[in-house]
Image (tube, rainbow, N blue to C red; front, side, top):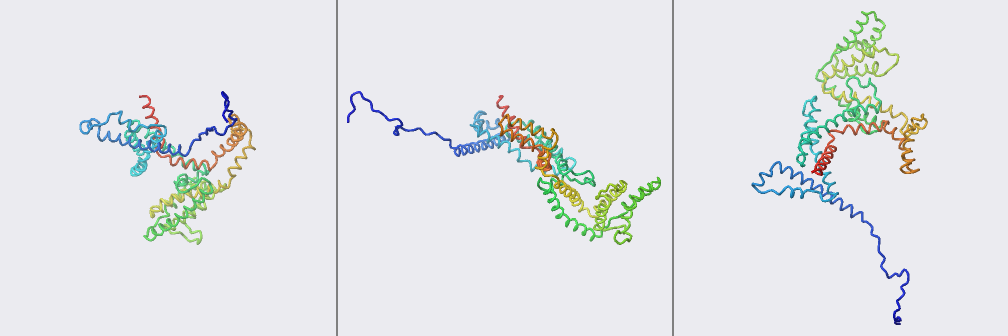
Length: 439
């Protein structure tokens, strides 16, 4: 039916014939894919930028202009300039990664130098390579060399401190470092893990692998007819006894007599010992001397007796390595691993981390100070939930940092500090970016 003149049709409220706009949802997969793609473009621009800078050195512009022609500086910069944030990140990462390339070659080259000069050699090599890479990337050789040398020096300092921290984690005692033992190096190089029980277990495993090699080397030395003398050790102890008796210190001299007897008579048969011994015999005597007089500490043991035994032990060790030189490195490793195994087991038997953290609650107010501080800061930032999280962090973090696990994890990280090349490369990118912004 036709509408009356001047009348307007009534459209019901919520008419479904009207289009309803849809909310646009971001497509995160596409965004991530685009960001990765742009980052890769930036990395390629970084590679091209380095190649272009090297080309400038090999084929300078003044020569190219006369022979083949060369694009202007503005044109060259436009080729490799990142177009967006993702490309800038990709180029920066690639440029920093280039500083890692010569690390292995530097280490191998440093090892060819005399041991006394290897540290200085690493710093010099790092300075040369970092300067060259920075120059190739369009920066200055001097800036790159200075930062490369500084990074290498700092890295070596951090690396040198790692063994001491590892020894602290396992509570290694002073007497366990005697006879040239390098316990910290043994922890870092011949064991794995950060839990004391795992460190102890892997130390035993390494010892079990090295012992057959040691025994085979001793047998080979004996088969060649090599013999070591007990005379230096006997003379050392005998001289001390004679000196004490001359000073009428007969009681102290008597304390040293068991050590002298050990070196002159077989403790099993009671027969006199031959002065010249093959490598297996010297090793057995060395171990027996350690067991009876050095390793098993007793508060009643006279200090003079232990001192004489240690000196005799060292002299036996010298004779052993003289006739069987191939065992010196194996002895060093095994001798250093024994305290690792012992201390790893001792520390593992102490209270676990959770128990130590809870134990802070029973301590005086000072023990809870970090938890209270963490709870206060957390509550200001996140209310009740933030306070709970902050309090727990304040309670556990101090114990984690002081725990053997935390110290061993940090020591292992420090032992790989090397020349801090990733940090050097990243810092040089930031320095170059700042210089570009100032221009």
